[in-house]
Amino acid sequence: MITVTLTNPRHIAAAHAAWLATPNRPETVGEYAQDAIERVADSWAESTGVDRIPVSAFVRRFPGPVMDAINASSNPTVAAILAQLDAVQTVRLGHPTTTQGVGYLVSVGLLTQAQADVVLHYDVPQAP
Image 1 (tube, rainbow, N blue to C red):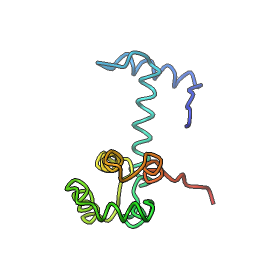
Image 2 (cartoon, helix red, strand yellow):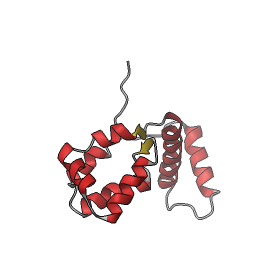
Image 3 (cartoon, rainbow, N blue to C red):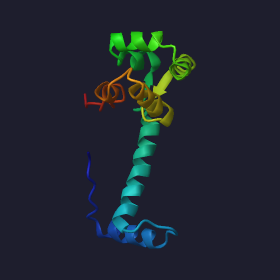
Image 4 (tube, rainbow, N blue to C red):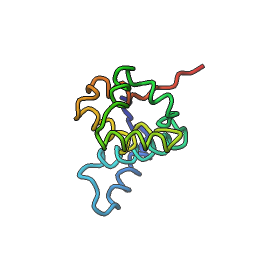
């Protein structure tokens, strides 16, 4: 987790002014600022592609026996998940389709929650 603190009086005043000018605003200026930071962070994720990995790398995140069980499943929803993987070149880890698909595999017992956490884990890039 990264916590952001505004210390510049200009930025604090601007955050308050923007919050006051927002219709249907969050209850506090802190919530408003957090929402703004989330939007900026989403734009960073989009521009850097940190949530996109090749399908082959995504599939390698599944333990071998788990992937074997998924491939052998006769469940039509599991077959649809596999078909979606076949139709794309990259997987977006945080995309609802991905998280729901992995969640479904957990719900039908093909994947444990701990394994799902590994499959959906974001690698944090390191400085050279």
